[in-house]
Length: 471
Image (cartoon, rainbow, N blue to C red):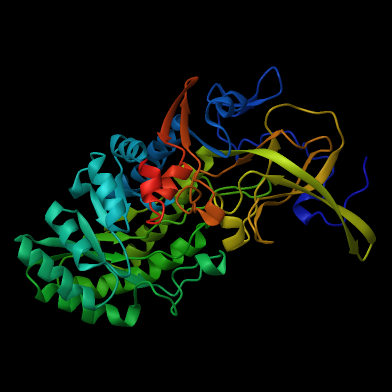
């Protein structure tokens, strides 16, 4: 047994962990090592994909995405149907949106939750019916509201008191009655990263519970609006049921008061269902989550003496996150000696040809990931590594800490799992790095969902180079 590295975090304390294994709850279900030791997803070799598409490369298991979409609908439907209510599942487009993904969600029976005019336009262009979409946003422009209302959008989430009049006016001009929800800060502080907690009182989203009666009264005074109910989103990457249950209890108390003034057919508890990014994380199965959330809603409604409303949820990460893998080519390898209380220790830095431009989550949230050698296996001793990007930032880290074989280095392919959500969506051109393509794989075949950005794509937007690019 090798001597443990004092720089290794507690989750990596065991030197017996397999640095070449593919934990089933972190990687796509189809991930395995082929006869040559390379990783394949859905029957497609990552090394062969790289030969055709280069790196960095986002790979998305289509079957995994589709099956998880069906699974979340089935889980909540089975939980709530015996109560005489229904569930409306919205795919949170901000996690990752392309035309094909929008169609996969439509075909699986999901609705689509959009937060900008751009997301709305893409979903419409992909063939998602407007009536099966909902529009979010804390600062919706007049153009966005007008476009959504005129397209016949199914619902608009009101994020402030002032939006009541603006949405009503847009509906009046379009000659329609617009269904709306009111986003509420429940005060529930979900167990999550500070920057991801979106139900705290002192933040930009929603209104306080105390403001709800007055705003709902204003909604009901406008004949152009129809109230669906309250909306809550308590955070992201939530690995348990407790936060959702407490938010539901608090919202249903206000829901009961609102029933005295008219119908309140729905309760929207938002999304934020977490996934496992590393082997030590343990996300609650979606079926158990559905039973816990619906059970709390049913019990609370019984206590309050009110009917169980239809339930709406908005998963995004849970559907696409585990289906994604990002592949990089390794470059510079550097051993850095660090002084610790136990004496000197070595941290190995392995640079890759991407970084915070294709995975901003580590820099933004201190997110943890795993990494695996993707083009081969090795019998070399495992060593502690930190995988870093090529950007001019010391915080440009892809994987904070994991083990890789000691001979992993320049030219090897490194794969990082659980990157299907909030990676392409947050990608940037920092340092004029072009954004990677997204390739879907299924049943041994591949299909490009989003093409690789080129330098000409970037230069075409630079007015000082437009003529040169055209020529």
